[in-house]
Amino acid sequence: MAIHIIIDGYNMIRQSPGLSDLERIDIQHGREALIDWLAVYKRIRPHKITVVFDGSSAPALSTGRDFIKGIAIRFSRRGETADTVIKRMARQEKEHALVVSSDREVVEVAASHGAATISSPEFEEKLVMAEHSNTKGFALDGEQNGPGWKPSTKKRGPRRRLSKQRRRNKLKISKL
Image (cartoon, rainbow, N blue to C red; front, side, top):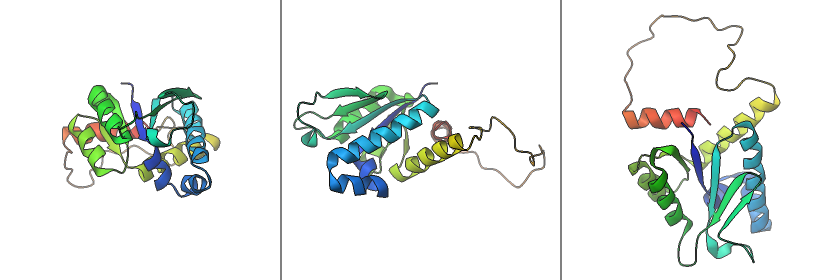
């Protein structure tokens, strides 16, 4: 199952300490740094990624849609917010979407249409971990068992099964 990661651009930038510092200098620097970071992640994990920004602060001579370094960039139209665009995309993509935002309203609407959701700080951790594990030469997704791991059938207590929606959400997030 292919995952389409839909990112609330300014929410992600403002939730990240490093990116927010760059944004304070110049908003364009913050956007470029986020796109560069996502391009590195895309080389490691080839998911479809779309970053949505508010069009009110779009660069001059910018079209509503761009494609930079394999990352789809969308700016909302005049009179429309990025949140509206993200909600519409989540409605269209349904269970194939993973929405990255810390905006509660966006997360609730996306989840109601079957999309998985993750907060911006959690997604940033996933980006850092994927980049770190790739540079250190470790296998991703448990492709290689560690030398100390031994399979066991020993039970460790009662388990409670998550709801179907939470299991799907967890599966999508584990693919990051």
